[in-house]
Structures are given as structure tokens and as C-alpha cells.
Image (cartoon, rainbow, N blue to C red; front, side, top):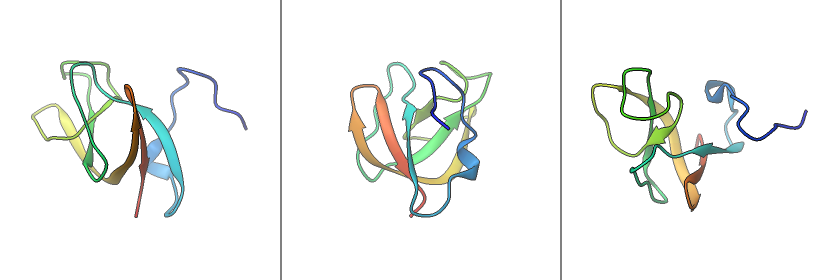
Length: 78
């Protein structure tokens, strides 16, 4: 199944060793090795985007950033 641009994906079902590109929250940065935090609807940014630090409107995940290109990050469960 091909994923269309801007289509939501349930990242919680990515298997170990698989990777997926996700949006980085506006005005946030992540780098290789960053832990992934997913924004919720109460956050400053689009729900489902990621950031590299925790706050009251982010959920910690077991995923790690392995590559960054602009406002996209490739994440995986190591």
C-alpha cells in the first residue's frame, strides 16, 4: 500500500527495524538519535507531528530519529 502525502499513519504499529518518515512540529528541531515525542491536540502545532523534547502536550514513544531532511524525520524502533 502506498502512502499518499499528508496521509495519517498509525506509527505505533511500526515493527522493530522498520522506519517511516514523519513531520516535525513547526519551529521544533530534532536530530539523529533524538527520542520521539508525538504532539497531541492541545499542543503548539499539528497533532501527530513530532518533537525531540517532552512537554505537557506531547506523548513519549519508544521511537528514535535516524535521519532528518528539512521538516521530515525518519523514525524507527531500535
